[in-house]
Length: 376
Image 1 (cartoon, rainbow, N blue to C red):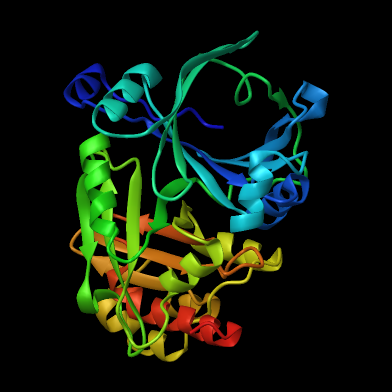
Image 2 (spheres, rainbow, N blue to C red; image 1 turned 90 degrees about the horizontal axis):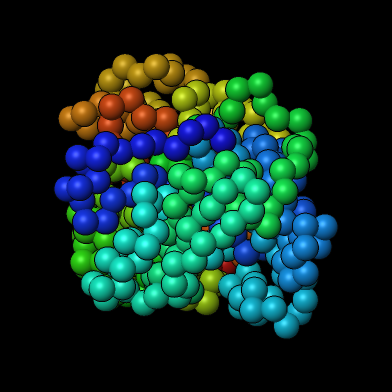
């Protein structure tokens, strides 16, 4: 994994809860070996570390997958009475931890719990021959947690208890994915503002964007969304809730099948969305379809982009522009049997937005999939 972004001492001193970026997205899955192979072959991640019986772990099996600065960890329980087994039975495969890299996991834990966060794991040193990792954890929406990870004194492959291992599949010569752009959570109706306030109070995050009313709505369904982020915009968490409408929204469908609040999608940054989408399609990833009519007038309002409109049309990639620049984006279909977790692939050129101009087209594409599943 490439070296994590660092902050200056001055920046850290001015921020009561400084962060370095996303450390890892941790998934609980029914079969970690198969999930690791899927993310290797279909997303171009490299397997870099492993924990399981061979490394002294008798309870779970975990594979660490990396691409650029993005890191996934997929974990499965080895016994039916393990807590993760009950979690997977209730929620299906999903995200259990949005781990955040911090310069000081002890100070971060003290600040967050001192401002009302529920502590899950008190700060603890994890040591092996590669050094020391300090890790703590707090609770957020649903059964999701934020581990706070300080690894500045550690040179191992991931954490103590993990051994380095080689790729599960041939890795691309150049990573398709460069980093984690943002992580989106779905919460119940009426709970969005409470969780936005949680991130403001507990982590000092600020509102970055807000989408309400007709911003994300069609004839049949709607949602509300607010985006919170740290001051450097390295960690961005959009929070969605359903809005009252004629039919069931994508958020309602998620909450029904995930059995509560949780992480809806992970946006993965790329520096070449055309190459990445072609490769992922060839590997079997299914993306949402966008009607050709979307592209008939795209050039008139989005202007010139690095990728010609006809290529965007061919690959069904969306484009949006704001005062800072433009972005290109596309969304996968859910990547497991339950219609819950999916992914976004995004290429930014100045824009720090989230594709407001595409929300209607995206929402209609999701509704078509919901209707096919009988869930609209």
